[in-house]
Image (tube, rainbow, N blue to C red):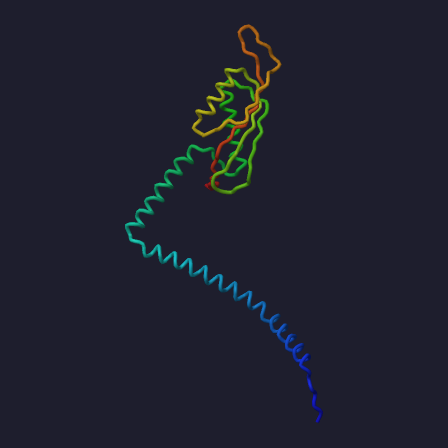
Length: 195
C-alpha cells in the first residue's frame, strides 16, 4: 500500500480552503439570523410598551383620552378656518379664488394669478401660495392688504413689489400702480366624500 504524506504547508492550505468554503456556506444564514434577531428585539420593545400602557392606572388613561379628545376638537375647530381641498392643487386653487374675491371687493384689477404648491401630499396640512399681479391705486392696495390681514383664513402677504403704472394723476384720482405680491397660507387636505 502506498502512503501519501501531506506537508504542513499543504495542511494549512487545505484547512484555509475548507474554512473559506464553510464561511461562504454559513454567511447567508448569519444575515438571516441577524434579521430575525432584529425583528425579535422590535417585537419585544412593542410588547414592553403595550405592557406599560396596560399597567397604567385607569385614571391616567382617562386623562390621556380626555387630552386626545380635546386636542382633536381644537384641531377640528382650526381646520374649519383653513382653506380646504381634496388635493394640494385644489387647495391652491381655492386660495386663488379667495384672493381674487378679496381683490375684487377692494377695487383691485388682477392681471395675473399664479398658483404655487411646494409638495404633493395626500393628507394633512400643506403650505400653498398665490403670486398676484394687478393694477390699483394706493387706497385699493391698502384695502387689499387690510382684507388679507383681517381674513379668517390666516392669509399672509409677502414679497410686495410696487411700480408706478402708466397713468398720471387726473383731477383728484390717484395714479395707477402695478403691484405684485405673494399670498401664503396653510391649507388642509380633506378626503373626497362619496355619496
